[in-house]
Image (cartoon, rainbow, N blue to C red; front, side):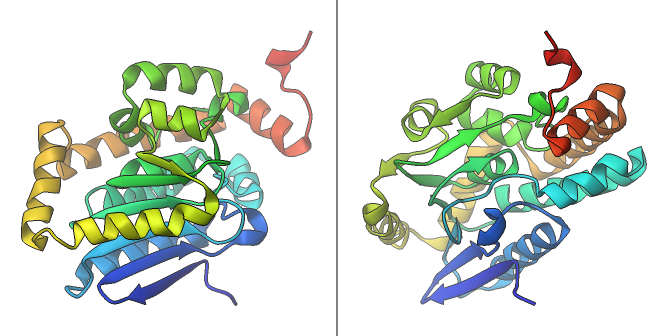
Length: 263
């Protein structure tokens, strides 16, 4: 069976590649587990200086996998909470990884894919990439990723995007701070390599402490994030089993109109 994640080494650079191009690198239990494991492995490897996260194929990550969502739609509230905590741990581990991280956003990123971008220190996106936090259209909210997305784009932008679920382009992602740079697809590797070279000039201990400093001054520590993750996992679990959440998921999976959109 093909691995959901591939780790490639280029000297002191570790490239983590989400490897489910047939489903646009959508999240399921396997991808979450493999990504969490890959992040732990590169974090423990003293020969790794910089980590790049990207997706294989046309998309960065399309968010939740349809088959995974079907399973969660019929799971209990406690099962949904346990499932959400796994995704929360992935985001938290990436956010607090003690090495510089770069999101190489090769294509569309939705839901949890936006969360991964927000958890990286630096984000470079292709000019054709599209983004969305569309959970409200399913009667849900982007609970687990919310602390990281809000830290990246600010409360004002997050309030609009959380409420509308609208799709936005790379230029808007740049304007609100989700991306640091937008490039043509054929220039992306060069842009990433330029940042990797800049990072190579810094001391690894200093960079680790600089990252911790920035997060701490921004009011985010690992302990605080763990506490918030517990609360947000409980929230999304409750919404998934609620009447509106069930109606929204059923409508999405059945390709019908949810009741709140009825004329």
